Amino acid sequence: MTHPENAAEFLKDSQKSKWHDETLWFVRDKRDKVSKGIPEWEQLRELASGIKDNVLANLANYLEEFERNTTKNGIIVHWAADSEEHNRLVLEILQQQNCTAVVKSKSILTEECHLNPYLEKHGVEVVDTDLGERIVQFLNQPPSHIVLPAIHLKKGEISELFHEKLHTEKGNEDPAYLTQAARVHLREKFFAAKVAITGVNFGIAETGEFVVCTNEGNADMGVHLAQVHIACMGIEKILPRRKDLGVFLRLLARSATGQPITNYNSHFRSPSTGKEIHIILVDNGRTAQLAREKFRNSLKCIRCGACMNTCPIYRRSGGFSYNSTVPGPIGSILSPGLDLKKHSSLPFASTLCGSCTDVCPVKINIHEQLYEWRQEVTKTQGEFAKGLSMKLANGIFKSPLAYKISGSLMRNAVKSLPNSLIYHPLNTWGKNRNLPDPPKESFQQWYRKNRS
Amino acid sequence: MSSREKILSAIRSLTLEPKALPDIPHFSNSGDLVERFTQSISGNKGEVMTKSEFEEWFSTSGFSKVISLSDHFSKLATLSLPEDPHDLETLEVAILDGQFGVAENGAIWLEDSQLGLRALPFATEHLVIVLDRNRLEDTMHQGYDKIAAAHSGFGLFLAGPSKTADIEQSLVIGAQGAKSLRVVLI
Image 1 (cartoon, chains in turn brown, red):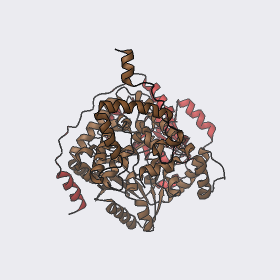
Image 2 (cartoon, one colour):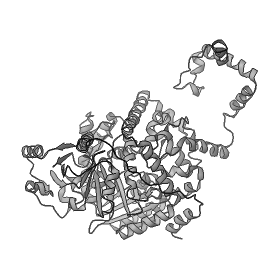
Image 3 (cartoon, helix red, strand yellow):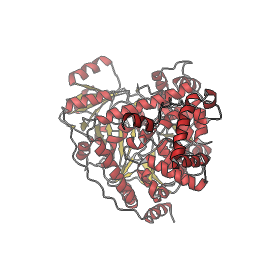
Image 4 (cartoon, each protein chain N blue to C red):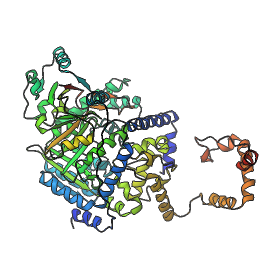
């Protein structure tokens, strides 16, 4: 299904989609407020972007430095060219440990690799331990947002789900009550798991340490109780120096949810005595994206989700409409690199308003890349249906007389068009849109009257 | 060819324009550090207290399972640190010394030497961190300057209790980890 088809499905429940829109805008607003409290905010964005530029320009060297230092620290490093290899490596570690139940904290990379279905097929129970992720896992859904996985659900739905899965009281929709039930359920899983899987927010080449940020503390609950910690890391997550974390930790949570920092920011350098830490460094299309000059700096992304919260399309169409692990504006420039045919409608799921670029903490030119992907899609898919109307418009704009006549015709037509025509099911433009009041006169007429 | 070589050689086959690594300038803010730190912690849903406020809270709450690794409150401990972190499942209070705090966001730095067991500040029901009020830093930059050469197997910037807003964006304190954070400034 294309993005417009999925979006239409989401918009059927108009009350819920309105709530979705407003809730994400509220998060965007919090981000604005907290960022304005930092006088050097724009300088920090510039720095973060510059540091990531340097990382991407020297990625091979930094990866080797990171490997050297992590190994020295007693961490076991693995490399995976693609998702299949990543999944196989995880399974091998689990099998060495005779582990059939694993706890996993939020990791968009493991979603991208479809690790859960792979492990389940091989008889391993996977428990997602972030509350939002556990909720969508119970529903057999992927997360609909990379920071707020269950943002598409209302508490009534979660209450019903927990009644079925965790035997909470029927009809009790209190978020504190439901969270407490999940706490009891998840803590039981933490204390029983032999192996814990996490993602990685940042890997530091200089020290060979890596950082994982959460608010719930679920990553730490998992790994410190388990015997073995498997950290799955995209190769672009490297930072050169420990002090670079100062820049990125100041930006990440403020951009994501408007908090000054996540409550837990854990720096893993070497395992506790008698335990193991494994890192899997994953390519899965990243070197291919690095080779695409126009799209290279999409790899700067630190997965804060700010571009989703601000995007007028994302807010009104929901994460699932993108049918891609990373949805929203950043997903729409990352996913076409993985499978252009499958994701060909995503670069068009944007008004190109540029708000995503404005809020991006690492200054990725997201809306320009969306435009560039459109050119790539058009090249491979040929003319679009819009071609005819574009040709017509081309003729009108070329001739001053045609432009004048059509302008006056349109002003009258917009006024007198019957609603039945505008809001006809065949006219997709009329869905969820209202025509503006047409101006009484053209700009030329107004200028003659007022300025000449 | 191994995947390692495949990835590294794929990157090295590209002509990538060199980009210099930027220096991080010195950033600083104005304002009283204690005041800003206190505000930050309360924004993160923790609480900053004086020694006597803490002692009053503790004496009236009737906890029976308490681990204290802080020299300031070693007498309050009822349990010693276990060997196995699984024994922390029913722990009610952990009292730890923090190395330093960051005023801009309330983050407190802890390393293996303060934690005893890495699971301790997460698994406990209530967490208390004792912090010297003269050990507050302005921003994260000063924080990382302080630990530039530190070499602990595990380190943590902790800024509040475990929290979530995953159900309809309603903030709930006490998700999977500690249900409260109290910072005692001495």
